[in-house]
Length: 196
Image (tube, rainbow, N blue to C red):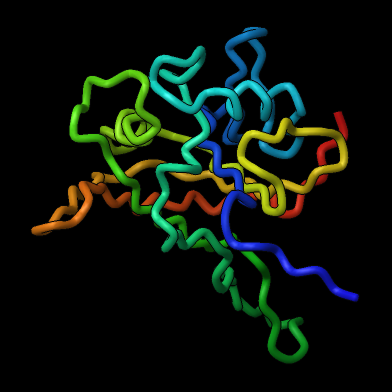
């Protein structure tokens, strides 16, 4: 018998600070002064940011767990990949080579009426996406509560993206929100199983 996921508290979304070394995105793990490539995330890295849920938490000025601030209209998914169909005189038939992965990374976040409240989960994503061109690896896990510690064997999807200008959204009688359409950088690590 198949099992269905119940709506609510079965997703985890982390914004992990990133930087490039020789064109390869690496994720920052400040607690050890280490950096970790996108193709080898660790349990320690994920747990460092799972615990950062408010601006007051350790490490939250770098990145954190923004799950509970995301409005339930998130679009974080693969789309058609970019391809190259250049042919040579020796090419047989039509061929295409994969060049870059394309994906959408669009999130709308609730924000707090008091932007200085360091204990508010709604202020964390507002702080982390406050300027354009901030590189992150967006780490997404499905099937576990956002507070469940990362463990060996869990499956994570990782998307390398940069922030764009966040767009404030509020209407009469609506909650305060900001919209962030991340700029896809064409690098992913999809369905990665944590090994260490």
